Structure formats: C-alpha cells, structure tokens
Length: 244
Image (cartoon, rainbow, N blue to C red; front, side, top):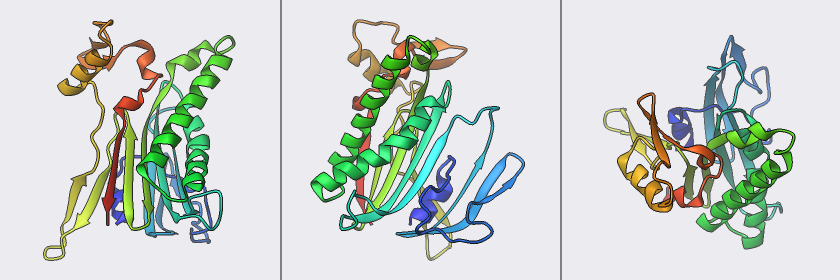
C-alpha cells in the first residue's frame, strides 16, 4: 500500500538509508534535466517509486525514506519512515527537519519501545524547538532565517499500521486499487492547514485574538502574517493511525 501512497504524494523523495534499496546502476535514481526519478526500489514494507521536478533555481524542498529499525536499538520496532518537507522562503528549515526529525523519532521510539501517535508528536515538537533555538542563535548574523519555514508531511508504516502526520499546507493521499475494475481510487488521509480555507482562518483568529490581521489577503491569496510562518503551532498538527 505504501508504494501506491508514494505515487500520489506531490513531493520529492531521495532515499538516505540504503539497507533495503536495490543496488545497481539506478540505485540512486536517474536524472533527465530537472527531472529526477527512481522507478522501483525496496524498503522494509514493500516497494516504492519516486520522482521530483525542480521548479525553482534553488531547490528548497527535502525528503527522506528510512527503512529498518525505527528505534536506536536494532531490537526495537521495524518499519518504514517517509518524510516530505516543503521549504518556504529558503531551504534552511526543510534541511533542518530532514536532518533532525527522524533521529528524534528513533529516540522517542526507543524510550517507549513502540511506535505511536505520541512518539510522532514528540518528534515534531523536539524538531520545532531545536529549529527555534537555531533561529535564536543565528538571528544576529542571519536575521533572514526567521523568514523561512516548512510544511511537513510524514508517513510511518510499523506494526501493521500506517501513521500519517502533517503540519501546514500538506496532504497525504492513499491510492487504493479496485480489484474488479483495476481502477485506483485516491483517498485523502489528512487535512491540510491552508489559510484559503475559511475554517482554518477562523481557527487562526481564535488562536490569536489580539491580532485582527493574523491572516491577510495579498494578491488575492490568503496568507498567514509574519512570524506565524516560522513559529508553526502544534495545534495545527493532524495525526492519524490507520490499520492496514
């Protein structure tokens, strides 16, 4: 099922863990101009394919596939982790998440000896706190770092369950095959937090009653004002555990 989910995700994937990935001429994928793709690979839970098209001069987005032990100990739970991090205003936040979110998840999984919604929530929070600390330290030399952010989308397959977590304007879609017709149905698994949605704007207003301009209409597009793009609140988090 994960391979079908991967085909529907609008994001870029580059495998970092090679333990369960085929070796060979295309072990790191193939590139044609601005298109990079990998037609077939293996991970702990099955097969996957992935692709990315670079749309900006600077690639701001990051992603990863980690397969094997999901804890700091080889005796811990096994599974597959997929992360997609959409960069906003620069690559700093997405790169930080790419380097720190999975290690945090492994640490909390080791502590609890299982994968759970609470583990993912703690990993998100620890990553956010770490990046805010980085912003504080770099602010005097690099103030523009306070203007970058990221929308995060994470999927974990472990113990027969698929966990989906997202922050910001991101969406996970599962492709489910219909045996009778061969058709593939797209099933949305998460709710994106996009300011263009009225209920989201109402939520932001209720969270920030002191700021009537917390969301602004700019160039006919609703946007979250100011530092809220950086200080992503965990109240925006949507977590799901779906048995498969």
